[in-house]
Amino acid sequence: MSLLTSADARTSQVDEFAVLFDQALHDHLHARLDHAPELAAHLRGMVLAGGKRIRPTFAWWGWRAAGGTARVDAVVRALVALELLQCCALVHDDVMDRSPTRRGRPSVHELYAARHRRERWAGSARQYGDSAAMLVGDLALAWADDALVTAGLPADALHRAWEPWQAMRTEMIVGQHLDLLAVARRDESLEHAVRVAALKTAAYTVERPLHLGAALAGAGPDVVACLREFGHDIGVAFQLRDDLIGVFGDTSVTGKPVGEDLREGKRTPLMAVALSRAQDRPAALRLLRRCLDSGPVSDRTVDDVRALLVELGAVAVVEEHIDLLATSGLAALERAVIEDEARRVLVRLANRAVTRTA
Image (cartoon, helix red, strand yellow):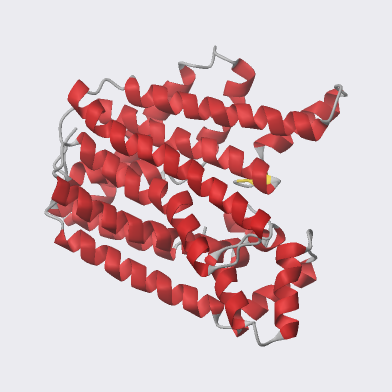
């Protein structure tokens, strides 16, 4: 694979990786279609139907940043693990959040529940749908491990990659549990919400993929530390942006219902800031708690809460924090002794992650 270096070729390099990656992902899934065919079909449909490939892209450029050039095919095959880990997280998250759609299509548990009803099978359609979806997520996690260990990496590279891979899986699950716990305990502190964002999203979206890619290339501790600092800050900013999209996003772009996070009563940093600022405004506080504690909310309530979040200044606070995180993350990247071309691409990826609309 030729390594392009001109400024005009940067987009081509990203596109070149995307082509290689999608082919590796297709091959990995196709080779396993005979195993658990029904579950595999749903998993394959979800993975290949869409997604931004954010995690493998950051990992690829972490590898490139640390000077990775050899065994390109094996590295690309290894990074398939990241997309399957993401699939596991999304399928399980949709069950826990009762999300009816994903990427503009019915979520996996809804597809299975609909089939149960259509076929008039015994038992609860909802329980069947949830149970089957959890198995699809489990299968994605199992195949993620397969992708890493069967990619054809040298033993020393696989050994180096195993530390960030183990940490990534654990942090993702712990973050998901903390998110679940926050709802159950009605934990509304900003500190807890930011910790959830750091573990549930930042670690396995940007920080650990960069760490994984750098480890595959044999990066030293100083490079790894800078990339992880950059990845942590950009990852948290990514989640904060996601929180804003979850409230204000356009359904035609996001593929999710308007104000879905409000309907699900999520304890996000955005809501934590709003609750803090509404303490001396009883009517505003009641409106916010209607979303958090009262179950399903109307479209009118969603519109009222969205307006209130702007009025209270919570949106402005979150936007300011996103800017601060982006600045500190890019400063950490600037300190890293890495390949210049990779640095330029990582800057662009970071800007895209924190300014996106879907």
